[in-house]
Length: 334
Ligand code: PBG
Image (cartoon, rainbow, N blue to C red):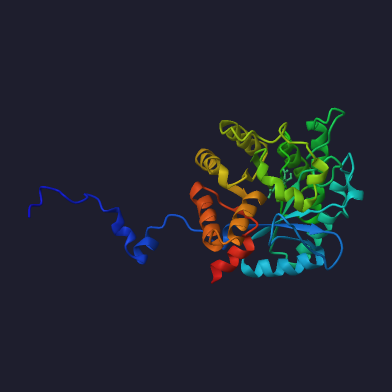
């Protein structure tokens, strides 16, 4: 046998993969409960628990049940929840005035949650689609075009009403230009200096939002309408960097990329370029895909969900909004 005639691999990458202990020692990324944000749908009434056909396992809850759930989520160690309202048709209008009603469903929910589970972070959505009769995220002109600056006035009032009710984080998901700056200024002037802004900065005009629109009931109002004049073209990546940069300049504390799995390249670019708290949203359509395949027995649900979320971490996400947050928190305890 001669050793200078090398007939074996010079480098055996598999050596480190041989034992569990060495696999653990070299593991670069980990998913923990600290990474999870749970999006929740709140509806009027009491003792209401409504299923959503395109999102099996996700429910719309009335506030009383939401509070019970919040205690459980907190005890599981989930740091924060993101609230989305289901608005009844009679409360929707052209001008979306319900969005900033101090006694609106979201504002009442924030107050009740902060009283019941003060340590659980509360994130609220700043956008008008649950409150407009046309299902767009802003006010529209006679041509149906979403008018930027007038919309910002309403968004600012909405964000202020959330902060006043006690929201920890306001999260503008509307993609109007300049809204982060306007909201930051209004918060400063009202002395809400510690209210955080999570900017949905790189939010794409995605077809993966379909089940969410069923959940909040905006699918019907939006009809054949689309959001192409304000949400980003899925073809673009450089443009996302400009959106991120602007939102940071205007005062965002955290930025978000949405959807998640099809946009992991964007997350990586944001993290590399800006090094700021970078969140990602595993949206309703991603949940629906994983859930449907799992329910059919085609995928191992726990394994694919954990893998999908670990991929977000590897791509550079800090926190992840996911409808699987509660299940994952339970799995991580097993
Ligand atoms: C509303 C909003 C949407 C989502 C979060 N906030 C839908 C949309 O922009 O049409 C989608 C979330 C999901 O699909 O899970 N501005």
